[in-house]
Image (cartoon, rainbow, N blue to C red; front, top):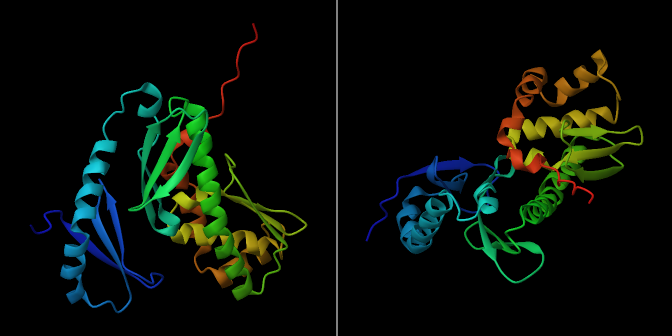
Length: 246
């Protein structure tokens, strides 16, 4: 049986291997490295057909309302645009008192444990996103620092509510894990913006001139990034409810 799901092919200069991405909006997206021979695609799709069919059915199922109120309001997918990864999220209730997040084949993130506890699920998602940010955003920042000869002393990852990133006088750069959700060029701009603050800790004309040198048309991207919060799942900003004293 041939592949019935429509697909698009995108070439990426950053990709080293062929990657398959599934989403309800875009269907199947095949990301290929530069110079990839498209004649190899039919054999690859035939080899991956079973995984594609199962992942597609799982994705459609996860988009339906879950049985419990807590699970129904939690995200069924996480689209990490900055690093080109889209994850399907599933919740499996077990007897465990906590919730842990595990990565499974096919970009499936499985949360298992006390999944009826909304706050425990959100905490597990934030921990996973924190690991992702440390594993992707931090090396990206340090690579840009080396390429631009910036002196970044320390990198922290946080979950700020109003800032994408910040830089201290001690040249410590704090990155918001929510940068994972914005388009890659916007994330790159945010990283370079903070690196330029290691030279000019202000928004003077000299700061913008330096940033423009490393990121042309930076002010246009700065304006675009203001709307970047729309890419971030609102549930990530929820705070645990305080229990009323009896």
